[in-house]
Image (cartoon, rainbow, N blue to C red; front, side, top):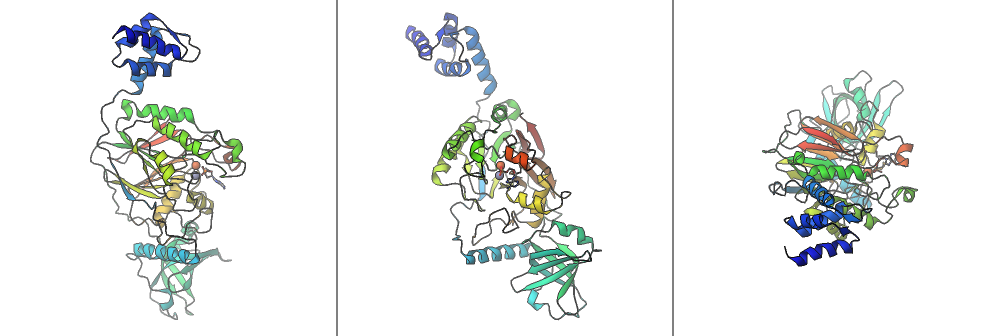
Amino acid sequence: MSEASLRSIVEHLATHGYSVEKDAVRRIQRADDPDAMLDDLLGSVDEETITITEDHVELAISQTEEVSPASTPRRGEAEVAVVHDMTGQSTGTGDYDDFVALFRDRYDRLRQLLTDRVRARSITSLGDGGQRHTIGVIGMVTDIRSTANGHWMLDLEDRTGQCRALIHADNDAHESVREILMDEVIGIQGTLSDDGELVFVDELFHPDIPLSNESNRADRHVEAALVSDLHIGSQEFASDAWRAFADWLHTNEAEAVEYLLIAGDMVDGVGIYPGQAEELSIVDVYEQYAAFTEELKIVPGDLEIVIIPGNHDAVRLAEPQPGFDAELRSMLAVHGAEVISNPGWVELEGVTVLMYHGTSLDDVIAEVPATVADYTRPDLAMRLLLQKRHLAPMFGSRTRIAPEERDYLVIDDIPDVFHAGHTHTLGVSSYRDVSIINSASWQHQTPFQRRVNIEPDVGVAPIIDLQTLEVTVRSFT
Ligand code: D5M
Ligand code: FE
Ligand code: ZN
């Protein structure tokens, strides 16, 4: 290296306010790439330092070695195939007719999933009763109530009409009625009352996942890290944990992690709940996304990333949520990230992943008994959605639903992995070979969550092995 570059090293450091010892300059000169070495050095010395010594240089070298041990293209094979993304497909105008179309589509598609097990007749053809043989009905639940005698009464509606169904207190299905949500589509089998007004239910059916279901697996050892709910811009963003996670992704231990899936609530947003402004560290939503992209840039550049929005993100609140407008999409496309709708479906090496932010989990948890699902077991609420084959069955509750010609929230295909967030609590289990993962959060408990008694799990990343579908949860706090 020439005299000039020696001087340029000294001058470069001087412009940043540092003097430098001769041994340190020599050490920098010996580096393969002195310019990169200088950048690393400036990034690692603390502001109190006045004179840079050889020790500072050695420290900077060891830190960069720790952070990026392998610049080999180990993640070259990874590829995301987008299976369903409704971004740009929205048809709804908010008219009453659009909701009619939405519910017809929902009913028809869920009915289809039940026809194998329920030989259903249309409700208007049920007749006058007096028949003792079994009849079947597939309908959308329009009312659920218990009677004075401890029986359950359900109102069901199909495309032709309405009927009333009674589930006797002694019936095996009696307990499971508590898991039925308004507006979900179920099948019943039973007998008709003499006056033809009532169906006495023998058996209840959900569209469900078949018992025989077997999930697909990747044919090589490759892993995906699942995260959600960073809430950048919130004072409670767990930045230390996130950076520890990003650092870990650069280590050999994370070598097989080739995919990073982010299930919404990347930022905290603005005006999401009353009094939120006092809890924000970044009050401008675009600046929040700019800060998010900075946090995304520190993960390895060769990871394949998929992003969907959540209820705190800057898209319409009503579901399905399109995958952002053009400006935000281009901001979010760090490292070539795929930005798709909520819900969104992707395929990673043959393994289908259904990504859904999870807003309806609030409705499910509020509605079913705590013994069935609560905030400590969001995966059990997700299991109910799989049984109902719908991501947000209840209409007119907390989850906003957009009128579309097609119901994008119906789960027609069976995913191999079902990934959600939103509850900020971790939940991992499997149901009929479908892996269910709620990826918790990177936000410490907010004053709001303290009031509603939610204890978030923070700074944990479930890692799924796509070859075995085994999940390992790593903690970074
Ligand atoms: O949701 C974070 C957590 O807070 C999640 O567990 C749901 C809960 N939450 C959100 N809104 C409400 C209301 N209105 N009541 C009760 N619990 C709620 P996030 O989407 O991050 O705000
Ligand atoms: Fe969230
Ligand atoms: Zn959320």
